[in-house]
Every structure is written in structure tokens, then in C-alpha cells.
Image (cartoon, rainbow, N blue to C red; front, top):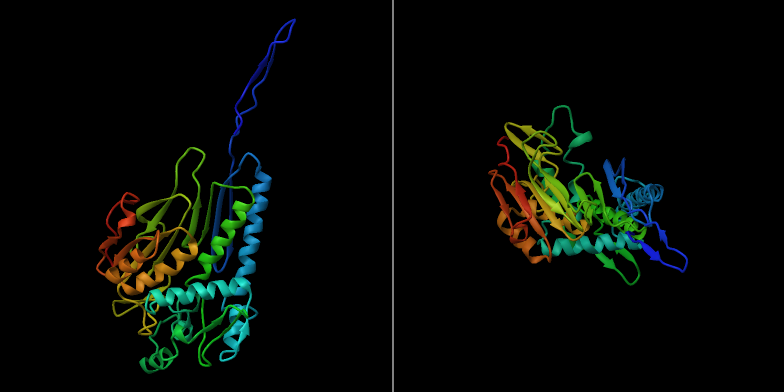
Length: 346
């Protein structure tokens, strides 16, 4: 920011040098789609980064997000993850990004005692939600669930970081849907920072990161969806400043049978949708951590979930449990603004 003036008084008179204009940050917004969800970018220009350069930085970030999706998505036949699945039981070479996400995934499995488990993908095609949902949803056969569940165990994955390769059990498949989006958001954040931007928001569906503060000094505000409210109805908000935010909810992809909700967050320990929570929101230093922790806490439930959050440096959590009660850990004190109680409903 430049706001200065200079005066000189040479002999024979005086001349005033006009002050430079004060920098005014400009807001730049861009919406797009990737990873099967909506993208939202908001950034403020910097003294050395004008609006055109800001738009270019956002375009580069989106291109990087799409490149990483091509590597990490189990739904892309040409991805590294698909190649690992196709060659289950064999060593498969992977790039640095895939290797990094796999390492974080195995760490998440360990600290959550298997609540977070990327080998849950063995159950993936049994449960149909979202665009794959049947017109009249039906539950998978219990015997088939138990058969598939026997393949789920992250501890059978071997990761060789020296030779940059991974090997699954020969009957296993992995899916990175519980962590990859957060990792990809973090890479977009990295590129925007490298471009010289310091105040911006990156959002990919329920995963987002707020960098710095807005020019008026206010923080970024993110709402927590009411699990039983209308889309875009928030029961609480959290301020973000150089922090990530991620929410896992049972409302996004789900169906009701006989008054019971079945949803896409599968408990790998049972093979069925987790029942302890309605939603979990995680506030963390980076989006990768926020993304992997929200599913784990959702599955573990209020008591063990909050213990897990407390064990990870810098992680705050908000849980709406199956009885619609709201729980938080100590790191949310003074950060969470509760607007009203969550709505009741199935």
C-alpha cells in the first residue's frame, strides 16, 4: 500500500509532488465445476497483482485441480488410483501427489482406528446414492455386505516411499473420496499464494479454505448447513482466516426406507451407513486434514470423535449427533456463532 507525499523547497520557490493514489483492492469472483461438484473462487487483488492477473491465477488453480482429479479419482479409468485398483496384489508405481495422499490416508486410518479407511471402496457399488440411486431404493443383501466388508482393511496396503509404489491386497480396491478433494483445494491455495494473492476463498463443494482477511478487515464467514433444513439453511457460522473448513453430512446423498435414513458415509467397520451423527464440521489449518477428519469423526460419533479431534493439533470440530444435539471441542470456543438449534426431522 502506498500513501505518501514528498516536498522539496529548492531556491527560487517550492514544488509539491502529488501523493500516489491509495491502493484499492478489487474483488474477483469465478464459479466453475470439477470433481463432480461446484467450485467457487473469490479473491481480492493485491498491489502487485491486478484483476487480470488474479483471474489468470484462478484459471491456473482450476486447471491444477482438474489435473489432480485425473490422477486421484477412482471414477476416472485412466487415473493412477484406477491403475492401482486394476492391478491389486501387484506393486504399482505412483506419482508424488498420489503417494502423498495415500500416506495421509493411511495415517488417518491409524489414528481413527479404522473409522477412516480408503479400502471401503470394496463396498462402493453395493450402495447407490446420488446420480446412481435407483428410482425405488433398496438395501443391499446383508450377506453380500459382510462378504465385501471382509476386504476392507487399510492395514493391508503397502506403501513404499523409497521406490514410490503401492500394493493393495489382491481382493481390495481404494477410493480417495474422503480426502482427495481437500488435498486438491490445498494445491489450489498454494498456487494462488504463489501468484501473490493473500486474501481469497477457495471452495469445492463442502471443502473450502479462507486465506487472510477481506480488505475491510473482516474474516471470511462459512455457514454450517442445517442437516434437516433446506439447502443453504445454516444453523451456525464459523470465521475463517488462513484456515480450512469441511462438512460431512448424512443429507447430501441419501434416501429413506421405512422412516430410516441411509446415506453415503459408510462405516467401514460394519459396511452400513454410519449412524452416530447427522453432520460434522471440521476447522483445520489445511483442507486435507479437514476433509479426512470430518468423515472419521462422523463415523466415530460425539465422544470418540471429539477425542480424535483433540488429538490433532489445531483441529476444531462441530458435531450434530443422531439426536440432533450439538457438540464442540475446546478449539471452537469463541469461533462458533450458533444462529439457532438445528431442525428436527428424519
